[in-house]
Image (cartoon, rainbow, N blue to C red; front, side, top):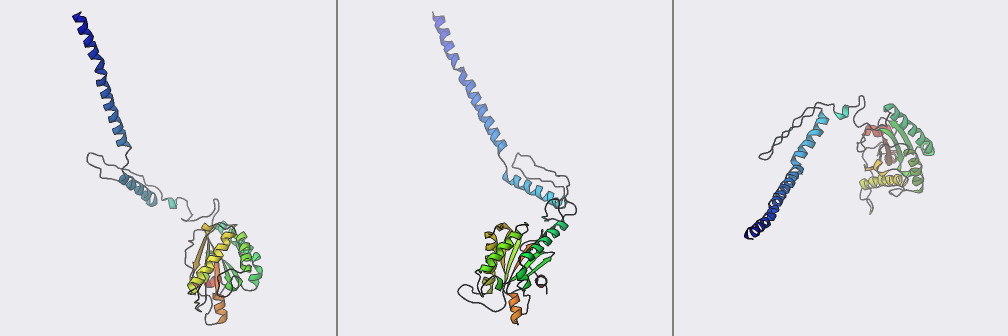
Length: 277
């Protein structure tokens, strides 16, 4: 009896050995997750260096090596990119920034803008015949110079009824292309100072903004539009004469050729060319 009781007590003690195996399993599981976390952690500094190096490599077309200094116990990171062509030169014969439609070229661009010039001339023929509008097709695009009397009351920037109809008809033609549109307001040298416009700068900018707003209301995408106020700068006529001042008070709408920035400054020579002078 004593032996049987002793054997039962020993067997009872053996039943708790699973705790040792369970503790080992938990320890290994904890170590596994620690390793997985360490592997998944991204060194942000190294990632930025790698990203910048890849961008520079594609721009310059050179082979680069990246060596980053790791923390103690780490390993160096080296990335080698074979020499490649710069992306901007990958398409032969097409300059960087050319936004022509697929399958088209400079000839197609000129043809589209030439057709746009003819369509605008038909729509605005009465104003062209009266000398209030001048339309010019040049290397910069299509420029429409409109005297202020066709758009605004004297000394104001609120469009008149004629300008609303004019902008609506122009918008129908301008919607046929997707080129950027720059609207510039110009004044003469006679100073203006009232509660609305402290100077010619504000007047010219407000007039350009009014034209841009009318274009947008008539369906032209706002991302295509930019308004610029130039005040009395870049005159196309002699401000010493009444006729010269009248020609300087104008709004110039330019449909920019593909690849030109909408912020490009119009030179006095270009302004004279746009007015046929």
